[in-house]
Image 1 (cartoon, one colour):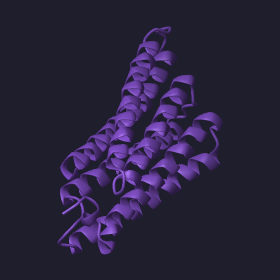
Image 2 (tube, rainbow, N blue to C red):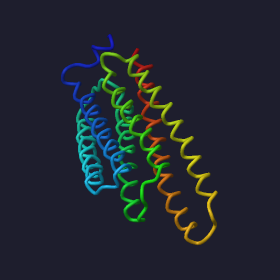
Image 3 (tube, helix red, strand yellow):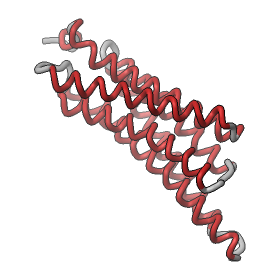
Image 4 (spheres, rainbow, N blue to C red):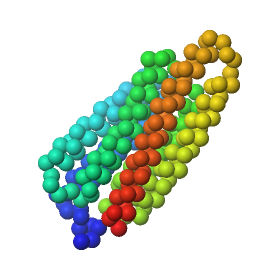
Length: 208
């Protein structure tokens, strides 16, 4: 059985749902990037809306998995990829939520990290989009997503080092604790993007 034979019309629904979920996640990360540039309530609402819409797509995907015996990709891989993509937008949402709760304003470190995360989300979306017809291209996008994750981790370490280099008064310590929490959310977001890229690569290896 060839690669394309695995994607029968009635089975395309799983790939379609993964593509839709990745697209909603990208939409949310684009809104997060806008939020870091503008600190606007409208951008924050867009992040929240994308997270809720992505969650709904994932619910449908899980329901379809439970009701389908034969899947075009190993069901474990479908579930794991969906979960990793879901975690990306979840961390994007909690970043905005905690910034508002803790009254943290966007700064250059946050803007740089989120810019890379948005690009990684785009690569994940393209990777899923190319899985059916161009698996080698999907793998290329996964590699790029992993490179971006490494760049986010480098920026994370720089941001943490910068936190500890300032004055050590009480006000600075409070701000340091707040920002460290936000930076950690974005580092975790990058980790989940890396996991999604790994799963895309695993699927390509299994099916080619």
